[in-house]
Length: 200
Image 1 (spheres, one colour):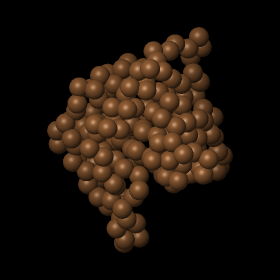
Image 2 (tube, one colour):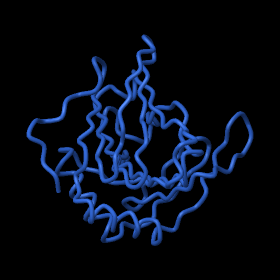
Image 3 (spheres, helix red, strand yellow):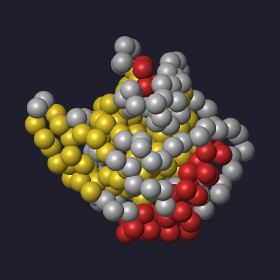
């Protein structure tokens, strides 16, 4: 695990918090986790509904969490797979760095830069409002954008192999975020976004 001489700063000027903690894993450990996640996770293409149409994404996903924590977004509902030992250990590490507890995790597999995520907010009613969301990245380095919903100000950061990004406070109310596509990127990326879902 790497340590920073200075605490990371909030990337956002107002209305929430986004912190890029940089790499939290040794390079060899991150490499091993990336290989294991890619081969051992039961990846499935995401199925979403947009404008009344069902769309199957090239991006692949998996949903893990405590029992009963179904996740509904874009018109579809995901039932959580039980935590693996590997994911539990990573969750505990992330909880220590983020200073928050998590009960679920959405995993995304982007095969290359032709796959990304358009502007969106993680503000579904099933997520605890203003709770911390922690994203761990493996594989290709990708740019990650934030855009304020009123001022349209944009902030960009890079998510490196083995890095941690946390989002907290009112960010999901006032900021959109997205992962832009890039023709220059030919390698895959895996992201794990740990969340705190409502239990009642």
